[in-house]
Image 1 (tube, rainbow, N blue to C red):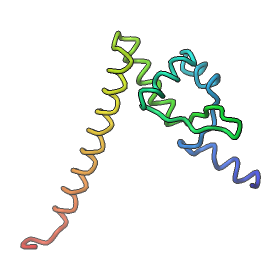
Image 2 (cartoon, rainbow, N blue to C red):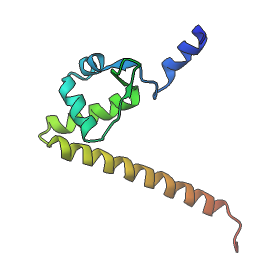
Image 3 (cartoon, rainbow, N blue to C red):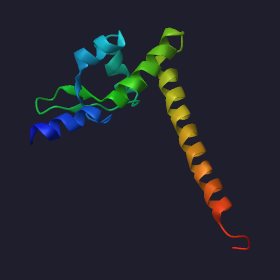
Image 4 (cartoon, rainbow, N blue to C red):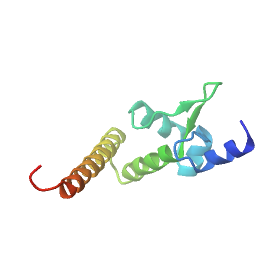
Length: 110
């Protein structure tokens, strides 16, 4: 891998660049919280060759949303379920918008 390849990953939201400790520090939470949302299957961190959890920026955004809900008093399991449902709703809206676009571009009578 060249240096250019490595720098290209800095813009990749899915690249697992953050250790558990760094991720917890960035979120202002504990490593136990990150383990808990992993156990609830909200996020699944990748593992380094040594078996250590590594998180992407995308996963950190999801974890931050979970922390926000938990800080508001929502139990962690419920917070994880809410986020999963929010994500599913967003995906359904995206698909519906694509279908509407395709239908509006389709010639009448097809």
